Amino acid sequence: TTSFKASAQEFLRFLRKIDKEARKALDLHLIVDNYSPHKHVKVEAWLKQRPRFLYSPTYASWLTQVERWFGLIIQGAIR
Image: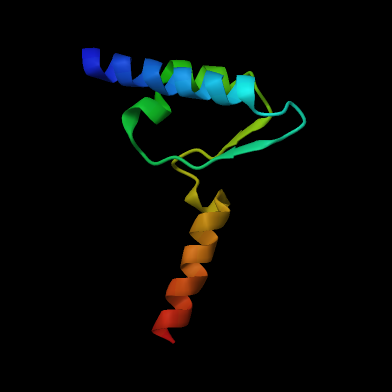
């Protein structure tokens, strides 16, 4: 579990850098996969405290616009 913690900490460092360097007026949309550091308790708690980060939970892919676009592409290819 050491590498897991290190990876979650690294992801948090990345998020903090984005938070610091991106203009405060921007809403930031995060699209992440099911990689466990993206779902770590500390990462989720950090994101909940920052409403400018729009974060789709991994169990709600229907909320992610990209997933909807892929669905339309797949439907178009099948028909």
